[in-house]
View 1: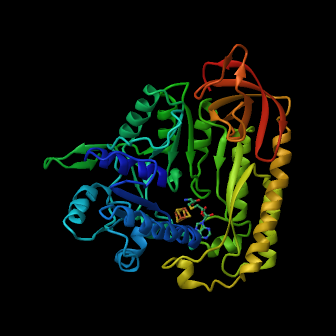
View 2: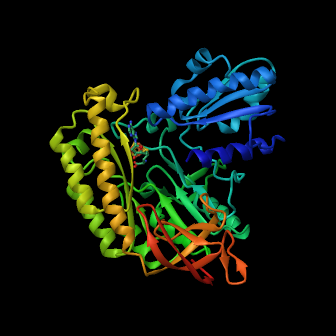
Length: 450
Ligand code: SAH
Ligand code: SF4
């Protein structure tokens, strides 16, 4: 999400004549795009802001801006606390960057943290940053209306709004014409994407057309998947309370929509889920997993887990471990609960699980996922996987890396027959070995589509 926002900002500033640089050395403007999701993320940003002092000493007219969720959360306090910061811009205010920069040039410090109910940056064509030329992120909606008790996102990113499907389609078509082979559609809760067809009223304003059917996430997935069979489609994040069979059916009937679902569970205990205000129970979640397995038997499933949420008992933690053993996730992002200001949990429940207990539980969760995922990967030894090559392996220049449609990293030798594999190739790979996080194998053939 943040990366995608940086690409929007780069596009807005490119129109003002700014070019991106790979280092702050010698830059006229440094913008730090920030995340507030956990305290640690904010701590890292604070350190980064401090580092900027050094660059400003070398180049005193350099300007420093803080963008994104931390800008939204801390607002003017950030200017007061960190003298090095010249401007603070929230996630819905990027279009005002040129005006704010003018203010800064005039010797003022500038802030715009207004949240919007409409802003989707829909028609802005992002400048692709750090691009491999193969995979790209496309934001389909902004904000979140869910109010999970632990989460700061509704406060920093505002109300949920969906982007016009036409502009999403145009962006994806443009990516295909530039040679990209994979798009990941992004939103905090993609399953609640909805677009009411619009018409222009007598005053020239856009208005939802009455009686027209809502265009939902399943419709959007089908639209993007039909652009080209050579374009792989991924998405993130699904919400268990909203993930419909309709979405799974569209996935199952389009071979270029990847066999992969990221479905954050957070906890295996219904009582904890209730305190988290997630809107589903353990049983509901397991029913969604059963639906995925029924409609897409080969799909990889990953999740997010939080350990040590307010009031979590040992029994409730054991319920999370038992859910992990039952579902056998292919992968998980796992976190210790970190209390965030203003959230429902911060206002309602004491953060009462001791730090060492959170840490011990996290380790047990990590170990359990590692056991199930390594067994999961081993069953692919001997199979043939279609891999989209993304680039040269970080470990060895003799190898390329790519991903299977289940999102597993696959390592293959670069040399293939008399030539070399290249980023953007779809390759059929015979898998010969597996670890918990990757597969290794030999390329057998270059194939046309993913
Ligand atoms: N919108 C997505 C997730 C957004 S945040 C969803 O609903 O699933 C990504 C992950 O960060 C969350 O799934 C959660 O596991 C974790 N997270 C969010 N707030 C957190 C907090 N206060 N402490 C620890 N982890 C948190
Ligand atoms: Fe946060 Fe919940 Fe919204 Fe995800 S769905 S962004 S966890 S409030």
